[in-house]
Amino acid sequence: MPAFVETIIVVFALIAIGYGAAATRLVRPTTGDGLSDFVFTIAVPLLLFRTIATASFDHGLPFLMWCAYFASVIVTWTTAHLVMSSVFGRDARAGVVSGVTAGFSNLVLLGVPFVTGIFGLPGLAVLSQLVSVHLPLMMIASILLFDWAMRKDGESVQRAGVSAMVKSFLRQLLSNPLIIGIFAGLATRASGIEIPGVIDRVIATLASVAGPVALFAIGVSLKGYGIGGQIPQSLVVVGLKLVLMPGVMLIMALLTGLPELPAKVMVAAASLPAGVNSWLIASRFGTGQRLASTAMTIGTALAALTTGVWLVIADAVL
Image 1: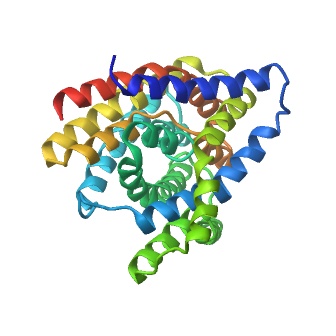
Image 2: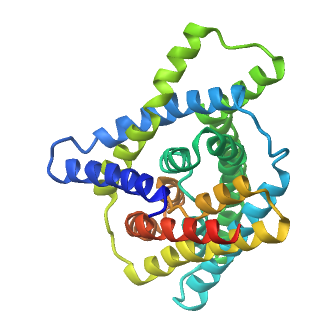
């Protein structure tokens, strides 16, 4: 049995335990939100800060890695949009939500503990380079494409409204704890200043609980989102997310000659299901919430199997 199978079992078992705790009312429904807030605002930002400030990035500049990964995002997003519009006859706005859900991996709550458990700190260092650009680029793409979709569908969109939305996004981005943690890590690394021992221990202690707490929080939250309908459409989106995207990423890794570790981490990242960000984007735009919720729930359940399959394939060909 491959060594990573145990990690996959542990990761998805913690999600299942969180789901079961919420389903049996051992914890309140709001517990998931509170735990997620702790992970997003404290634990993971500190983990990213410490990783970027101290880790060794032996694989060099990440530009080629970014190009390979976002090529898989573009292919998957475009395919999901076209299928939703052409096969299911949905409007352009639903197509954008489908593309977001198919191309937006859960890199923080699920990706951080998943990649760390399988590839260790070197793998987390690689993932942190992706996380640093992933959220800003995906959010910008979502805003621009939804503006286009609103106009294509004949809805009234005021330029001032879109401008205000973009300004609001930039303010939220620059105050995002993940982004702050990443930039603080880069600044510390560039300055050459070592983190004092006691402070480093405090940071390491808080960062060490990020993984298990994040996974438990996913399970609790999934019980709240659940399956909201649109199952045929959701299954197609989930199939594209869990099969097409990691497949394209693997091909891009081979074509670009990515080093083994970054290539495997990127395939693992691409194989992860969509997270709550796709639902939040759908809610902000007022369409596709049921599709995003159902796809997120089904995708997370199926990913317990498909992520392992892609890791086996990556081990064989990379």
